[in-house]
Length: 116
Length: 116
Image (cartoon, rainbow over the protein chains, first blue to last red):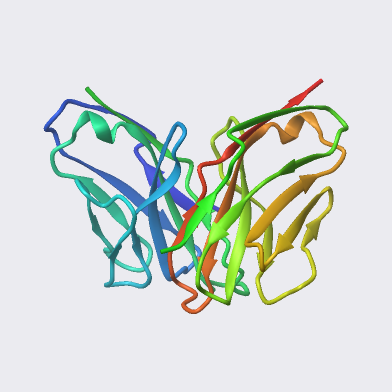
């Protein structure tokens, strides 16, 4: 049972570099999310996608772009990384899938990104 | 916009004691879900308990229970007979029920230490 898989798990970037965080889920969920977690700030929503082909901004979207490639995959791109984007990033999904809908979020293991 | 507030950044209790974590939220919605998630040192996010706002009965899951006060917009988590494995960050979260694929907003978290 893979659940939600995100890659890479660790990444170090220099200021101005770009990178893409990949996320895939195998639970047939409609909704997918990207959060960032910073000390003392909890989890803040960057972007979410309620269904394939749609994306919406969350609380802190500036400096990020997303792509809902298909129902399974939802990627997060940093076009020009800044030290303020140093964080742990979590991908999550929810939806009816193959089970009764409960509203529960299923999370990936997180990706630690450091921008120097 | 919905907000979720956890007023206790950090707490410590002795093993086997009972501890209550506080959460308040602000919303104009009438139908919504509330959640408590646990994040142990492994960083994996785990759903602890869920409460549907239209249900008056407080949710329980083994040693975990909630005190849901809809009028006061309060949603506290009680952990009975606390165990060392309960040491973790705990996040309160809110989701509107109108659109089941909508975003989920988290509080800043409470770091709980269970002392031997």
